Image (cartoon, rainbow, N blue to C red):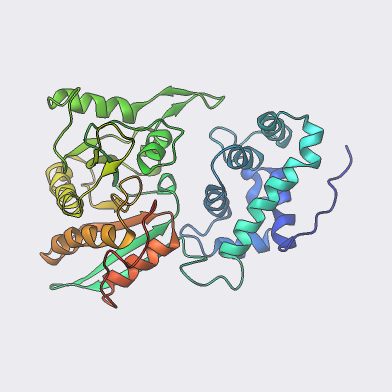
Length: 361
């Protein structure tokens, strides 16, 4: 087989090393010399090349491009130890082309897209919330102590080692289909049990939420806004996520596909999260301690970032100001939302409805 043709790119060292990873696979990362990728990986929470690849691929548009990148690089579930030829063949099937055509065309495009994300997000010169930060630790003075918060800027399904992840949902506790892009859909998808071909075999997050509704007399009817339903996390448990708290904050508008979310419900729901954690805390070993919030209501609920951040922070600040020792995290997709949160919690300026536009956090 002829060697891959050369490819010019804005970040040639990163691209060259990505092609080495594609050939060797993730199981051989330690045997590869990857100085450009290792330098970029130093800016990620885990500091590893594999973490860098997962974070970067997750920033690609959902669909064929992202899925193909996952197969090409061995990031798709169950493919980490697949030979490069098998990974390339599966990616080619996504585009409906021959393996040779894929190698010469689509694979170069896929690796080029990943290269651009890595170079622009983690490469030299990328230094601000808007471009690089996948997580940042904030220290905020409270009445009795200085509280520590971790802000993650990446998809929720990349979280690791957080006891409880908060998942916004509607008052019917109806989860979206796994292929959707919302926080609740991502957690449902990430918690599912899959077969070797990627098909979902079990849907534990969905099934446990249905069971919770039945046990609590809510099957077939809406629950009050502010309800928190606690379930297991399915296969996310292997990543250190032990519980998912489904928070009913979105009230469907009859006859439409839209929802209403009240800021007061966001505050009340976040406060209820801490109450449920306190109730469950000692039932686990070690006890529950860490929790991660997305921006409740900022997606389909339509709340502006500033409103969602302010409503959420009101509950978190009140809980920690009284001396609670929870380890609090926030997760959002957009750097602008993270910057807004950081500005608010460090007390630099007030945040209101007009401080940012709405959108999925």
